[in-house]
Image (spheres, rainbow, N blue to C red):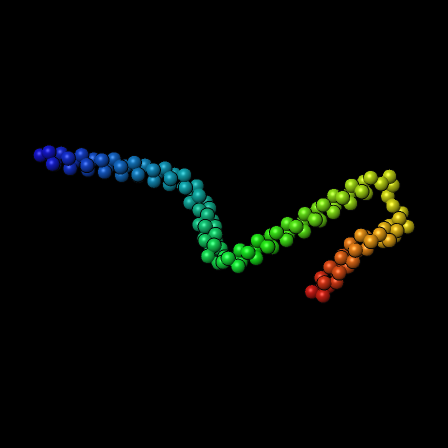
Length: 130
């Protein structure tokens, strides 16, 4: 009889555990219900699939290329931002805006000519690619 009682006790424990699991699953389903009703859960599944596919496609060479691209883009952005801040500060420090002769006299400066040459070469390359 003791064996039977022990068996019933174990069965009761299993039933209690399954009830706790069912309560947890029901709570999860209640929280997911708005996502299921609106079809937004499909979006989350699609996003997880996209991330998984991206991870599968990325090999070490691609990651290194993307890293170099990010670094070079960051460097260019940093340089352009610094140049713009410096030019803005220098222009704001002038009492009056330069006249035409003052603008043309900027072309006598070596740094201005170097910057204009860079812009013209960049436009040249863009024009060739069109």
